[in-house]
Image (cartoon, rainbow, N blue to C red; front, top):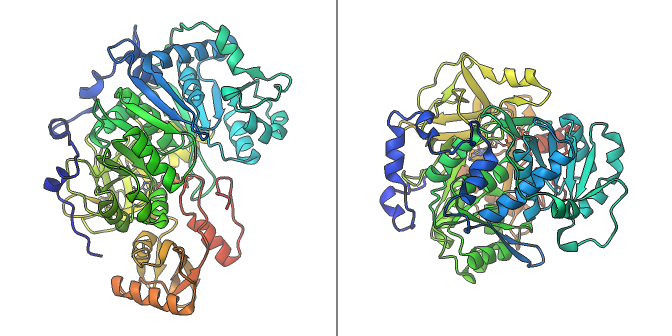
Amino acid sequence: MDYPVITKPKLDEFRVRPNLEEYHRSVQGFTWEQLRGELDGLPGGGLNLAHEAIDRHAHSDRRDRVALYWEGTGGEEERYTFAKLKELTDRFANVLKGLGVKKGDRVFLFMERIPELYVAFFGILKAGAIAGPLFSAFGPDPVKDRLLDSGAKVLIVTPDLRKRIGGILQSLPELKHVIVVNKNNRSKEPLAPGDISYEKEMASASSNFQIVKTTEDDFSIMHYTSGTTGKPKGAVHAHKAALQHMATGRWVLDLHDDDMYWCTADPGWVTGTSYGMSAPWTNGVSQVVYEGGFRASTWYHIIQKYRVTVWYTAPTAIRMLMRAGDEIPKRYDLTSLRYMCSVGEPLNPEAIMWGLRTIKLPFHDNWWQTETGAILIANYPAMDIRPGSMGRPIPGIEAAVVDEKGKQAKPGQEGDLAIRPGWPSMFRTYWHNQEMYDSKFKNGWYITGDRARTDEDGYFWFIGRADDVINTAGHLVGPFEVESALIEHPAVAEAGVIGKPDPVAMEVVKAFVALHAGYEPTDALRADIMRFVRQKLAAGIAPREIEFVDSLPKTRSGKIMRRLLKARELGLPEGDTSTLEED
Ligand code: ATP
Ligand code: MG
């Protein structure tokens, strides 16, 4: 696949303001220690993310800057300055203290994207507890699994979600308190017996709180992984991650003081906390949070209305925007945008081309995982974009492609994507599963579970998750390459590719394809798509079979679940489907 490199000089046209100076300063002999001074630290020593993201700004000339512009599903608008957030999070920390919450306790959040979610989250950190945000679309079982596994002591919910999970609360012996946030009196029903009213407690709580002293290595947040490859794991993070969130906010997201930032990820997933809370706010930057879900016209409306300048989203969302058509964006003024990034899945080159065509900006892909806590590999503002590549490691990160013995592969050779342990935002354990945690570290490397290769210039290219790589007639095929070729066909909206067992070739490549509106799933179209991809890919790699589907199974964080396509194909049990998105 030949895509033009999007070169640096052109970046001026894209209104990116690469922080080149800072970038170059930082890569030369950079150590994380050098940046340490840019965090405030707690008065009297220690480190706490809530102080770095909120309190330090409330004590500075940024105090009256709007940190959070909120737009509700019903069009409600609210604004919160850093000073206001400090006051509210202090109050909530006092509420938790009053309930006996102590350092290290797990306090979980199960709410829609409302401001109180942000207030509660940082209040938890101030109280020294570990915050566990859960995605609001979960049903009772996934919520129960996570609350049981983490031994959560307090749960903060909204009335609708409280109702949805009412049946599980009896089976959680460690859960002591349920706090209900009745945003703007949306619910008229009385509280269930024993539940605590957020509004009532907040009204009487003191607005002064001294942050519980935490060190940089104390646990701050736990996130269950997306469940794409199996049962979700509870990755636990420490306050030190703030350092890397701040740095990558500048280096990768190119955040500047006057930006209006929008991260579309929900705080139930790691992107929604690391980059929907920590990165913008440790940099003191304003952001917008939209409560509702995906709708192409609404998303463009949000960009137009809030004059969003920096936008961080995900490949699935971009593919949905592409699917909604090029006419809709024309109706909106999107000229405030100057920089766009993507994470979560490989970003098909076609999506970058679409951005250039319709928004006149490229998407900058970057790679990381729940476990890594922050971006590790990225297409920076300061470098050429090679469409289809995840970019290069950020300063202070040693990434490599290694073989089973930990030996580094030569450029072009495929292997395990590995990271030298010790980066600031590295996860510290899998909750209650230290053994699995230890198993991820081999020969002095953290093994990510992804397969990749590098090129001569040190760019990293994603091949696939180790579990998804297909072995067909002696070729190792990454599904991403095949899927990217498929979605270049004008009829194809989405594609998921698996290896189907075959007596001769070991596996053959099979593609599941969802079509754009207006296309019929005919044999003629199938043959046409087949012809189209064969021209793009080596013969052995092109799919042998194409099956049309209405949509692909995805996790709730929007990732294609190839293991499910495969299980269904083979008639095998589906395994853990707690994060499967329902149609
Ligand atoms: P689980 O670990 O439960 O199977 P998951 O790996 O999807 O789920 P996350 O931590 O949310 O959970 O996702 C990280 C993974 O997403 C990465 O390991 C990688 O496979 C994929 N990924 C993220 N960003 C990119 C990217 N830019 N390019 C390619 N793959 C990416
Ligand atoms: Mg994973």
